[in-house]
Image 1 (cartoon, rainbow, N blue to C red):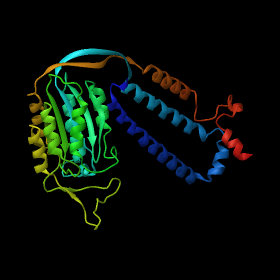
Image 2: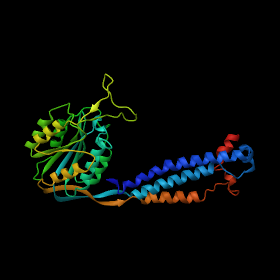
Image 3: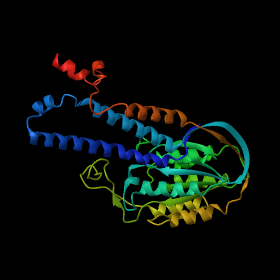
Image 4: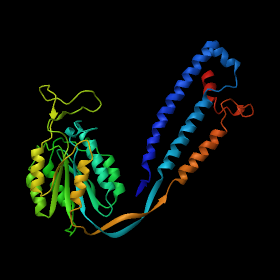
Length: 347
């Protein structure tokens, strides 16, 4: 398994477009200043050793070196050893609604983003438990089979979006049925399905599915995302909202009645999420009530560092950049490496 030990350093990649913008602006400003002194073509003849290509080459080399340094900071690693271990924990499968209505912003920054924050906190608080992830809209799919690999869980969680399920809708029942099957062989460990949705179920009998889960020894907790008053659904990439066939803006409302019925049928708890961390605290307290038992888990226990090759490339690029001068070198001018483009243009 390949992973980055510190993926948060990839935020430094935002520096690259900033540096490109600064470089372009500096070039434009430099050309304007030259025009103040006279004709640029005439000035170029007076400065035969000035190269237009070399500074650009140096800039690209420095950007490449920065990219590799950021990768080094993120600490790439490759798992080399699987370890089977027994832990005292519970088994939890998350069924996350990714329908378009989860983009409504009655909870900040949006229902879906807030749900991902709650789940991220949940994963961070786990030590000996197993977790799985199912995404659903009109259909339900296993995004992450039940596992004790929390690094993978966080990676899959961060990539979730409303584009993951092509058919729109809210098939809560299908998601619960799929979660029941995903637990595998029976275990003495406490089991829970956590449904995170706005409750707009249009596809199936979610209450019957929750009752079936309880009959199989699995509780069903429901986290309701949104507010009863609702909010319009933004259209991605635009400033407008989804509209119905009559041209009216669609307002998505939290269906608390449906959420409560599903939780009651699954003998679990209904929790309404808001802009605080209350949902996570209540959910965590509820999961701690489940019976813990021996859980067999296979996880990567040993990781080899893979930064060496990136460090070598960064060092090589920086050394090469050191020997590339902004002006043409008289001794090396015969090689015509950097002014080859200019030579072809003249011909």
